[in-house]
Image 1 (cartoon, rainbow, N blue to C red):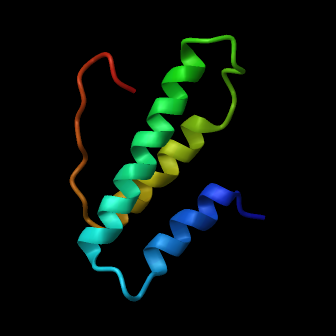
Image 2: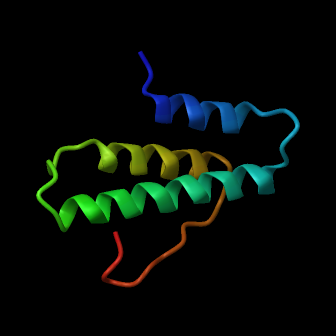
Length: 78
């Protein structure tokens, strides 16, 4: 059974009407959201094993599948 995040990623990747660039842009938005949620979890009393790391990894794998270059952030980013 897939998570809603996995289904969303699959839908983006299989969208026949979206160009590669549009797919990458959509996945970058998901990556930003997952990174922000992961950061919030690390800075609060939220459960540290909340799944955001796995979802961030899934987005990054999808970006690699499309051949997108990895965006490096500063040391303070996740």
